[in-house]
Amino acid sequence: MASNFSIKHQPGFTAIAATCFVVLYLPIIVLVAYAFNAANSTSEWGGFSMRWFQSAGQNVQVIDATLRSFQIGAVAAVLSTIFATMAALATTRTAPYPGLTFKYAAINQPLMVPEIVTGVALLIFFSRIKIFTGYSGLGYLIAAHTAFCIPFAYLPIRARLENMDLTLERAAADLYATPWKTFRRITLPLLWPGILAGLMLAFVISLDDVVITEFVKSGGQDTLPTYMLGQIRRGITPEINAISTAFLLLSVAIVTLFFFVSRKRD
Amino acid sequence: MPDKPDRNAIEVVNVSKIFGSGDGQVAALDTVSVSIRENEFFTLLGPSGCGKTTLLRLIAGFDFPTAGEILLYGQDIALLPPFKRPVNTVFQSYALFPHMTVADNIGFGLEMLGKPKAEIKARVAEMLKLVKMEALAGRRTSQISGGQQQRVALARALAPQPKVLLLDEPLSALDYKLRKEMQIELKRLQHETGITFIFVTHDQEEALTMSDRIAVMSSGKILQVGSPRDIYDRPAERFVADFIGESNFLKADVVGVSGGRATVKLSSGTEIPASLPDGFSPSGKVTIVVRPEHAQLGGASPSASLSGTVENIVYLGTDTHFHLRLAGGEPFIVRRQNSRGAGDGIVQGGQIGIMIGSDAAQVLKD
Image 1 (cartoon, helix red, strand yellow):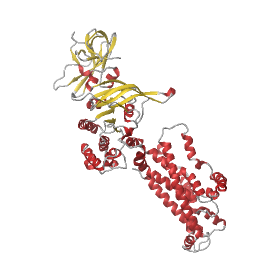
Image 2 (cartoon, chains in turn brown, blue; image 1 turned 120 degrees about the horizontal axis):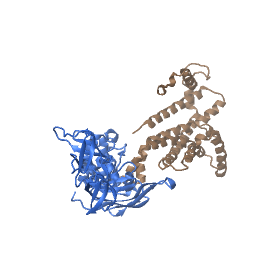
Image 3 (cartoon, chains in turn yellow, cyan; image 1 turned 90 degrees about the horizontal axis):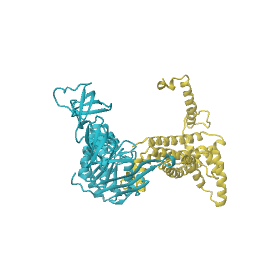
Image 4 (cartoon, one colour; image 1 turned 90 degrees about the vertical axis):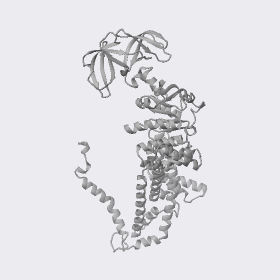
């Protein structure tokens, strides 16, 4: 009987599933629909129009925030992926030892500590450094984003490494490859899909962040999400819907790419 | 092979390998010493967990001994990393690089050694020809069959012309027919390349077919080293006799020892000659071993060494196995080759004599 058990045949399954899908997707569908509203309202339909996309595209603040988001996301994604790759190598290419679990926990700390706590802590920490050094550039945001992106980059890379046959590296060493050459010629090419997946995931996570960014940013350092948050406080126009829709498309595109890259197996 | 020089390629001297620490210590190898001659096909044979793969890994450099020396042509290599040893390995899983072509896999070792491109190309072509894989040089390793992967793994390990080739149960993943083919192929490759092969297997038949010499291992020790015929005909210990082929074990008393041979008295009172393991001089009670095909059946005559009751007759086409029960209660099997024609009158339940020839019995050390 156990092997024939199917959750689909439980009473109420269809209703629960349908409710979940409606709750998940209906708000998004409504949001996307009103991005094409000709009227000034996000709740009353006034005909189809692309005007809010045009308006967002010409809004200097939006362009500025978008570019900043990309800049922070790109740098943080690359840095966190490098750190995550090193961490993944160090935690998989060694015999298990006491303290290894603790290291996993340390690497994955951003997944466990509430963002608001990290945000407040960084605000206090960075403000001291700002006073001390006088520097108030994007470096703080990049450092913060890099830190919380590491576990997201780390997970796919570690998964890939754990599935990789250690014998391949042993075979390379047997065939006169030094440790560095073994890494360059065998480990890195085989790990590449994992690294790309980690990079994309980290980029999306960085783009999406609000809480930590809100605490860490200095004046004039709005990213797209914090800009949107600021706009909503002042009253919503469908411009926000248009920006959200573009943002949604970008995220879906990257996550789709991530799916294909991480699915690729030799 | 009479023309083989007695130069040692590998000398393993008092090597121990201990895993774990404290109470959890396990000696995978316990003060093992063995010499492997240049150009020979040497097999490490034993059940899983006997230490054969550990010894191979120590020679390859994937692990380091707890104590002892490993000499390659006189030079101690025990602590060198694998990429500094002129020794290559054929892995049980083949371990071909999945992101490279067949040709790139084979050329990898030479490339790492910094050989010029032209030389690598020529050598790869030569290797492809040697293993009959010319047509598949440009394929990815995931696009070829298991048997072909096996050949590529061999070519890859042979390409840098190692001083010693290590083979870690390379045939275990192949089906029976392919395994038989590869056994002959390996023998041919060893002969053509003149490279010393060290082959690890748990398959006694594979060991007997291919090896110049075999070392039988058990529980981290080497029990006996010798030619396949030595190991089969003159096993020194009960484990060796039991692990390789079928055996009849009999209790006997030593009556006399002279010139490396003993006279032993069987439970029936008959005295027969038996050969002794090298340098072993027994006295008192011993166990002797007789291979089933080295004993003959005869009438219950006084000339027979032993007599027993026929319990079972198993006809196997090429030969017949007679399962006997001796007067003292011990089992005894006699194997006889069949010829065409009528039966031989031996029937189940009948009394029968067993003749043990003058060179059929071997005294065991334990």
